[in-house]
Length: 253
Image (cartoon, rainbow, N blue to C red; front, top):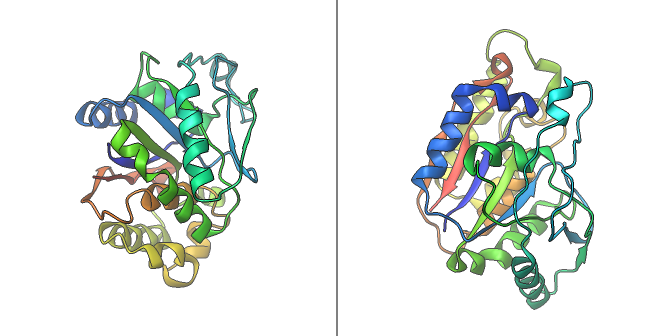
């Protein structure tokens, strides 16, 4: 299986026919996964924590949206076997791991899955990020790499640019273009050191990511392929919210 990173939008993505179609087409072009390990920008918890392995309610982790978005359902099967395997892999690398059996999928997880696996018939396990330390996130991805040979899709979900102060302002800011172009180059070359050190190396990093939890999942996905260096492609590109957010999504392998 490849490892991927998807820009996930907000719940309103569910009404964006173009973006939903792009996500669906991307999923159809990939091998069908046995299960999905989801790493969303919206769950940071130390140590790395595994969410529910049975059906529990979704986490509607957003405010002020129309009521219909709080009625979205995504009844994917739990993934207890995947959870056991993740625990085993993390133990081998001495990475601490905990469980939160009541924690459902947040919108960074279920929103893209509604488009990509609309039947909700693939087991999904969400895993927290253990904080925002770049090398730890890459190491976490490396520990999970064997899952790719076992039919598991390692799925990072976030945004490569995320500055809410510029949401809905007309035009694509120069800083957004600059950071997006840098990310395209660094990801194409799978330059792990540059990706880890993005705050110092990338142009306009502070404007593109005033906080960088939305970038963090790409480091886990990149770590999962870092020792193989497969081809990198960008199945979805473009801009959202009038240009402050790049839709650039990444497939490794």
